[in-house]
Image 1 (cartoon, rainbow, N blue to C red):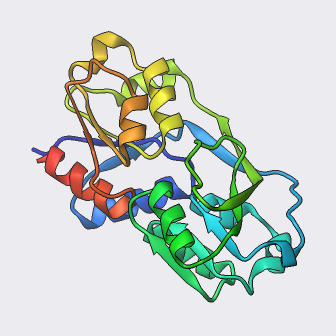
Image 2 (image 1 turned 120 degrees about the vertical axis):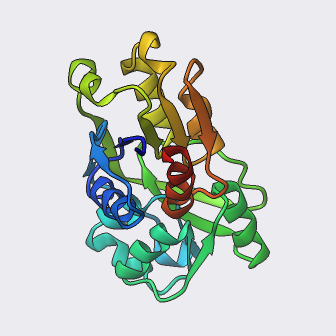
Length: 224
């Protein structure tokens, strides 16, 4: 009998991950620890930007009509899932980095871009921009949802928990009691998300790429 799978990411991502998990023969439960909502934002004039960077699909999803000002520019995305959402938003030139924001910054610099608009959430992790001149535009915010008492029934022994971001790792560490952790297994989308979850878990692993496909492949191995 395979281990149960718990998905903590916000909707609509949680349902997409659950569908992909079902295609792999995995049974999952969704309990989002955040919900995302758009916020007003102002970006620089188009002539002051020569590339647009997305580190989350939520950036493209929540940016709204103002994003149309930049659709003529090349876009860069972390992971193919984010790239698909960026294409759906109207960008014709979309380049993908598979190993996180630091690699993506290097790709942008190697393509001889300098002035970059980073479309992101309000809470972002710092990175080394190198030669890039990055302007950040916060277009959405992640608001905490759920609580420890409601999460507890989903923490049955041997559950594999998917962590899609460092913030989710931090929140899980706050809500999951130490007594339950020793029987739970963590599958994180990145080393940063894994580190944010802290210690004391039955096992803890990071995917070899920061995307949903790699994370689910890791989870499938843990669920056997």
